[in-house]
Image 1 (cartoon, helix red, strand yellow):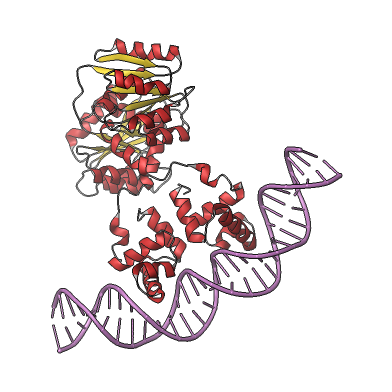
Image 2 (cartoon, rainbow over the protein chains, first blue to last red; image 1 turned 45 degrees about the vertical axis):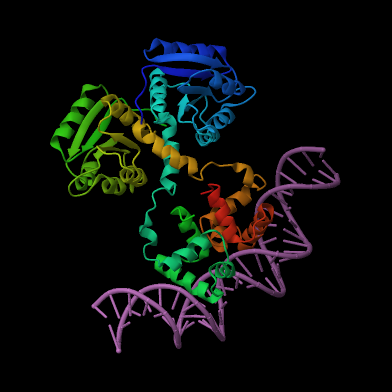
Length: 218
Length: 218
DNA sequence: TTCGAGGTCCTACCCTGGTCGGAGGCCGGC
DNA sequence: GCCGGCCTCCGACCAGGGTAGGACCTCGAA
């Protein structure tokens, strides 16, 4: 988290002239912001960035030639590129997930208060992220089920060998495949599998696969 | 997303008297907020909720007897319970992930501006979520790598019925279970399953479960 | 109307997966 | 040294999963 520089240089990317000038006005009215450039389509961004010093890119999603997600992805392929705030009118799941996966550091809906855009720009300029409150809930549900917090507790009972077998099973391998992978006999695999089931109180293979995936063992 | 009622009734849970009165002051100074109760530990929450009408619970993480994460989990086991905003001084990953997994709808650091707490309370009261900007980035990275990005392409070939069957299969249900769930015969399930396999070029059930999980069909 | 796609159900067959109840060898801790 | 946990392997048995190939019905588009 680096400190915010005195002046944040913003690049606006939106195909609607009116939106650009509106955003420009919002930002300029505040101290510490400068709109150093504007693009009317995603394919102009690369050129603008090579020409200008930019701290934050504010980008519309829907544009004529190259959409905001594609432009963001292209831009973020350069690790030195400035962070991107994605701006959109509609917040469907596709766009949210697409934008975030493309590497957007901020996601702001166009009907949120100007103050939020200001905060979003400041946040991403300092390496933080910003989500519109309206979409935070959806990201959270994904986070809750994501495997990041290895709650290892669940598999603690398993021996290392059993964990190995479970991992392969979770990838969809059959018993013979697991056997050849581990250079043991299929019968041995079966006995491991059986012990895994009883230790984890599982009914069958599908249940084991589901559990493994739910707890990020993949 | 329901509208916010005129008056938001807040329950404060924090073991430090000073913090509670500070929060209470912040909330009371604003129109539309009322602190209807205070608890000094997690184990008092259940009783307070049964006694009081509460719209939002604001809960400290570190408490003496029952910590905030446990209290949140207990509380959230009742689907009718009010949303919880977790308040903490330190933002380590364990707490963040623990709180969110426990079902917290908001996560606020104690060193953020009072305005943010206000917004957080409003957000969660209307079914939205709120993340402190300082932790949003971490949740986002988890989201990016999470399998939720419904790249629906993969399952486009499937009919709606087949998708239904696949979804249940992905949860670990057996054919008879799927059958009774969908009020059809097991034989029908089998024929759906067979068609799913051939359409998606899958070998067997485990492969289907893995694919479904990889593409967030759970 | 005809045709095709989707949904349902059927028979019969085979194979994998899973269970039960063992057994022997290896190794580390008491 | 002995015990216990772990890994390995065995045989036999059976339920469920999966395949093949078809039949019937409904509904909407051509």
